Image (cartoon, rainbow, N blue to C red):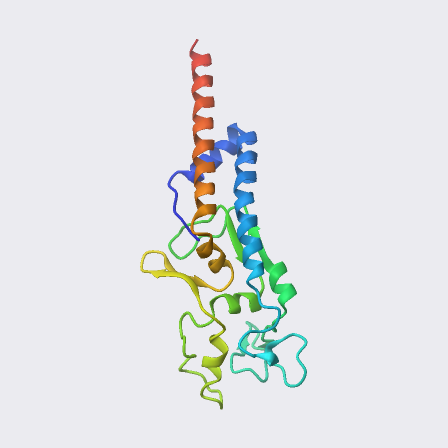
Length: 212
């Protein structure tokens, strides 16, 4: 759930340089909220592939979705088929992690400082399938014209879609943020503000001592 907070990067840099104890305490407070979202998101992962997509399961019997059988097959940079990720609930849950370091800049140049992510390909598919094409990709070459629609319709997408923030809908992580109704976000924002106040007080005291 990306939220822009002006001055946070500068604050964190200042904390790391001059008040590492406050930086550590802030990270600990934010981690508490991230763990709540992580736990809730993991709880939203179905034990088996949703929508009766039994061939997508990692332990499926019969004809599984593979790089050769899937209409979603892709190629890697060397031109070889990349195996389509199979659904394994345990792996997907383990892949839902939180991070407290700097993230890579997005298309708009923003970097995240704290986030919950899904590291597995299958988990990412479950999270956002159907966002762009809710009735399946019209460019699909599948022999079954409804195959794409059935695959992406894995359950409701929770969250919101807006022009400024983009598509913030999903079935696990985005659902966890949405159903939390802002409680963890409020805790994070308050932790940042409390740390800012403590740091400014400390800096003021230090300035007074130097001028005395």
